[in-house]
Image (tube, rainbow, N blue to C red; front, side, top):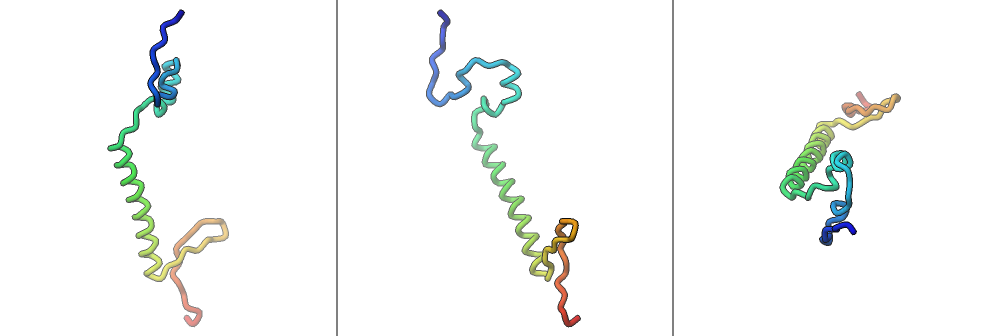
Length: 84
C-alpha cells in the first residue's frame, strides 16, 4: 500500500504525480495566481489599447482616414475634396 497525501479542494493538477519536465514546460498550471502581477499586466494592456485608440482618434480629427491598399496593407491617407 502506498502512502497518499490528503488532497485539498482546489489543488487541481498540483495533486497529481508528474515529472519535472512536465512541471517545467507547464509552469502556469502549478504557479499560484499573483494579483499584483495580474493588476500590472491589466494596466499595461489597457494603457496600450488606450494609446492606440487615442492615436487613431488624433489622426481622424486631423482629416486622415484609414485606407486599405490593393495589397491589403492599411495606410492613413489625408482626406481630399473632389473640388481640389
